[in-house]
Length: 539
Image (tube, rainbow, N blue to C red; front, top):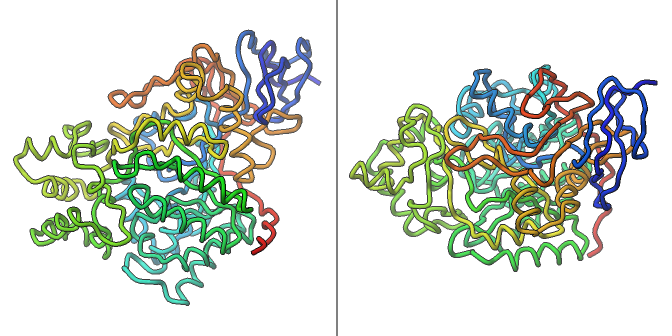
């Protein structure tokens, strides 16, 4: 029987961590067939991969593209950025924010949160099934979706700075259980962000137990990634241990001058926890700058009454004075990004109605306007209805390399796909690792890097029959030139496409052919099946 696609003459790196080997790769009905090198079977399309490498499609374990709404040309360009570098599946719903499950009566509250973080238009969905159906046939690559704890809390408790009641916690657990049963991939938290910051450890343990019952991971943006990163890591380990859940530390970093070098200790702690029996892994993006919403840099009480109230409050002089005081002295349990760095490290990435400020630091903007940085920030938030994204140049290169090289780390972009000058990680992370850190620096072998991008994340997130080049697996493929692969994206040109990625195939259909993105749209939301829960740990 004729193949739909035959890729001949390439070196196959199958995603398992095994050495490269010569083989041909066939595709029939969206499934893979591995063939001896030099096979001459009939195929509708034949790709000569001589001198090239064939790998599984890359899996980006941390994105926010589920919140990218709208169909204009700029947003379409944003959607193509990961695809051009070989990302065939994205894990979304990270950092505690997902657009589902949101009961209709609370939709406005969650839409305000999403819009202030990721920009309008913001959509929410009652259920995982409604979210999946809404993606329609418009996608070129796949999504697997986590359930955001912040979304659960906003829908049930709101932004109140208090513990959830027993009844509220039961309702959150029910919503989570329903979404996981329907195919959501796990639970995520963003414990530096409102409203997740208001939750105690016991609340998160209760929710993580629900994820564990489905055999799905607890994925966390730690409560602090700066000066208190080690205590925040201990909390995550405590939560996962008590819940019996697999633990995924999101975009692991030690940011801010006070924590530079701490990855020596945090990685050792993860290794010890794993040796003690906890299924713990992490992910990392290959840059020394992070990105988040501007309002996330302010004390959590600023948004305690919701987004509309925040936008009113930041106009008041007494509120601004209180913000200045808290930034100078800190608050218990709050990751004080500015206090650990400075306004000179905070650069505006997206401000839709004020494009002239994009690319400039808060310190520079404040000086140019002759105002205090807090006044500059509050004015900008009020002018943009909270919809401002920033870059924070807060990490050190040796820490990034240490995490990248760890056998416990897989790759992510933490892409925040917003117009303006988004972080170049959205368009460059995977190509940057393959070019800079593999070929130029030699930090990883090509085989190790591909494993971190394919087989390792597929296993972690239960993506059945993906992540490997094996007979019968889904035909998600990348054909690349390892001598030429490199990131094109920079901070000044953040959506520039990568080099060296020749073909990308999703479910057996070619979606990238050289410099051309095809019209094929085989992507969809993947429903992740329950797995056997991990056995209880011996204490």
